[in-house]
Image 1 (cartoon, rainbow, N blue to C red):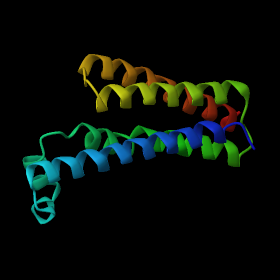
Image 2 (image 1 turned 45 degrees about the vertical axis):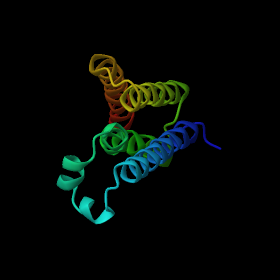
Image 3 (image 1 turned 90 degrees about the vertical axis):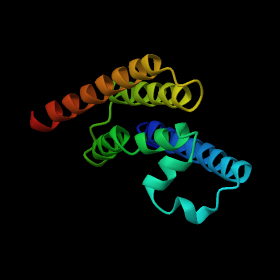
Length: 137
């Protein structure tokens, strides 16, 4: 297995864990507060009715910058430019996103979450600069 696939699988695993947390959280709140599922037919209705949106917000975040990570990793794999530096950056990105998700889905301290977000974003941009450098050389 190519080493870049480890962080890719870990990112998918993190997304699965947050999806499970979202599912458990949402069904629990709906059951506890006796919310009819039809009342949540739109995102606006869900936002208005549900009190705890942490896992839902984090799940949505996992389809923003992490998509660029997945594209970078798979593009590196496809063009055969995977090296130890790129793999290290990929693992660092995933670890920081895991910290971001942990903070977001638990105590949700904005500055703690922001630091993890900022650092993971910088790592991602370094990955893309490295890939562009190799591809354009």
